[in-house]
Image 1 (cartoon, rainbow, N blue to C red):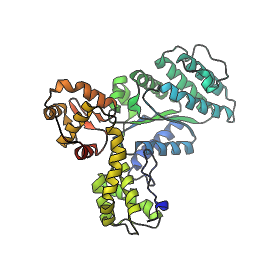
Image 2: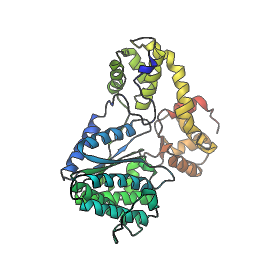
Image 3: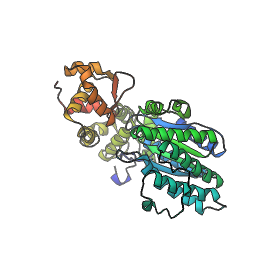
Image 4: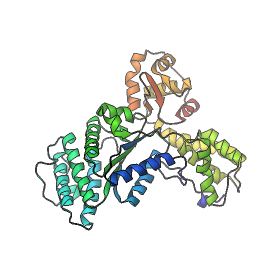
Length: 391
């Protein structure tokens, strides 16, 4: 098959050529955005799921929808070592200046720019980095307390957007990396947005720990957000994700080939893209067959092992590798820390530090007390292939 016409996108966060099996979530987001623009209340959304299920692609698609509906979109990813404010400020600055150039009087836009100038000073960001040549507005968003200043900034920005018959959408990826005080301030700010019924919406995404972290930051977070779970695709949606892009290039996968890919990927969207991409390049002609899948298998596994899995494995300490290898040895979707300790011939109480480090690195999460699970699909298979089991 012609590699230049290969329709599949196996990169991290790349939009898939066919966003299959996500209609319910996209419709929920569309209704949320529409209600907010009409001045009606609705819960913001936090998408949760494992690595590789397509959360980032969904955020991107929602962002495109919001833009068409008249929203200004601030999209960013939370990263370790970077504050929420430092990611948020340049995005809001761009939006407010865009609103300032739109038709209309713009008094509230001007005020919101002054409030943003206050916020920059209060959180010790360098105002010169953002060229804020504007006077501050004393007494608003200038306390230096994030949980006080962020709600005031959001309210000013939302009122400016409403003045221009628009809205603001915050798309925030990797939200589980937020510091607790940042999470606290963000949730408090969104609570006020909902109370005031102003057009500022948050749609975020993160690992399955996100609902618990939100609840720990503010107890009312469970009522403030909807938490759609983004899971692997079923067989029908997996087939659509592969077959539809292929058909646009005048090619098809046989039913047997689709089943073989599904069996190897378990329906996880990232792996579907990787397998379909390499199987396409392996095949000589359409229809792409089960034999083509088998022929590409060793190459695909090597690429995943040396890239997707290896990058994560190499971040682990020796103690963390042993912990995760013991989890893999149990070969369960979830396992207790006590079971891991038994494999390692250790006391469960002595594994707490290692477990906590793995959680902070985003390698595992705790579905419930005393139980752990991998955040990376099929990582246990990789560990069983590549790492011998030693206590």
